[in-house]
Length: 238
Image (cartoon, rainbow, N blue to C red; front, side):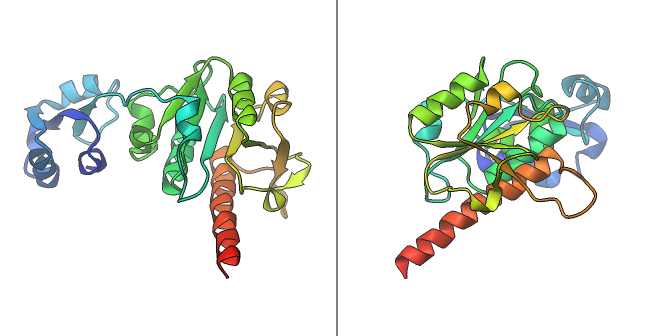
């Protein structure tokens, strides 16, 4: 439904025959978007969804055109400079999907992901991100460090999120184009990638847990970045 509402490039919708009446809203949206609907058996949906990950409906969607680092730098985020996410080997599709969902919610410019050792950019990611992966520009790169160097050379701040970081995330400057780098579930941001960043930001822990899930940590800092920019704008206006 989200893909049909947003005008994402849906080619066809497949619905399990017994659910035809229950899917009236989806059928109506497909009709409005001039998207063909095919009624089929649940077994075919199992094959189309690569293992039965569906709710009796599957959409065939064209991949969005590939984005570039330059595209991200030329974008705006919530009316301000671009806020970019870089995911350094985040391999759990649920985590990457949640990060992209938050990035889209704060009007982020897009995300940078490595071509290897990352959650696959497939339909599973679209489900995990509630469709955000279909609307958020994604740049796949062979080398994250080189991509971050390109951002820095263009004038962007590049911050790694690290539980041992030397700067509290609330003290960071987000007024310029900013890239937030989050690390994989097991190792965090790799040392070589961290060296290319301007600073490593930490989120204070007040209880016994030493760190947050990567998607939660990313969400906290992304929202703070946007809010801090809005506060600066309000102060300047006053």
